[in-house]
Length: 208
Image 1 (cartoon, one colour):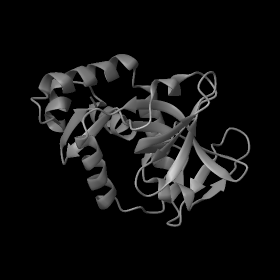
Image 2 (cartoon, rainbow, N blue to C red; image 1 turned 120 degrees about the horizontal axis):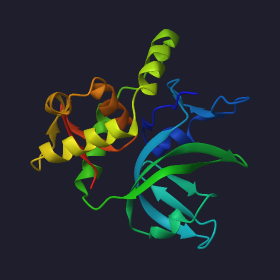
Image 3 (tube, rainbow, N blue to C red; image 1 turned 90 degrees about the vertical axis):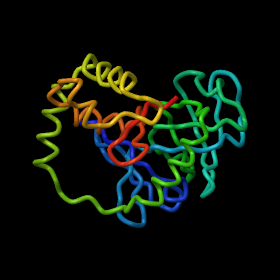
């Protein structure tokens, strides 16, 4: 099953959306008021509360539009974060007892606060549209993803680092330097997964 992209959004959109449960292997999702289905989310927020230190800790994050709980049931990764930390979270929305929370796949502390300002700009420019039926396109994308290896991803990340002069790396230069057939697709996936940020049109940077 194709992994869904992590949608850049704010907490308010999640809290005001409707949680939809699916049968079988189909992922559950939140459908927003605009009709956007979110099964994976990309958030930047501040840790404002922490509880349950130990095997199953949880934190509450706030991005200025609302607060939401983040819970991990697999390991103690949340123990590494404290109140006041700014974090990037890639995860899946879940519902328990009518409460929406996030189950994290990736969570990183953000040291450079410029990423927060960048996220505000991203949210101000995003226009959420109800996705069209693109079953044939998705089938082709799935075939492309099957041809993307971890080695290619690592090479793209290394090229970005080598070309970054402090102001990010030009996407066109990354593609031409890497000499990888699916470089543009890999970069798009890395942006969706929060591995890299498009700091401005055509220029990307690895989160540090």
